[in-house]
Image: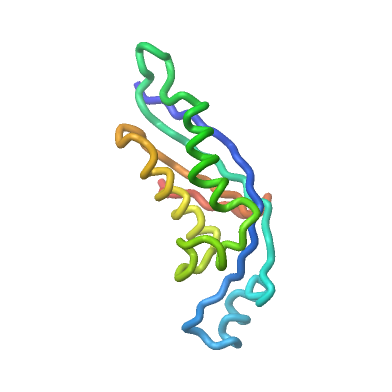
Length: 136
């Protein structure tokens, strides 16, 4: 029997949505205020869902303290209070849209978790806008 456990975290980060292959006018048309050359910030809510079998010895799918520590060290410490475009290697050549941030977080966590676990990441950029990866 598979069960999903979830952990919520929060981080703040600044970014600029910009594609260097486009003209300034095209960037402004596509990204609007989010293309501000001085950046803008969000208060992100992150939900991490881990699905797996319940361990018959511990009764856990995964020890939530372990998941908390993985999230802190590998995601929050890397992204919290950072300028994503300037300070986070993954976004040096990747537009830090909510979609791309979500996929990057999933990739980081996937590398830290045993392959026996299924993983889903949900990232809220605002109260009304959020992204899930993988989808369905």
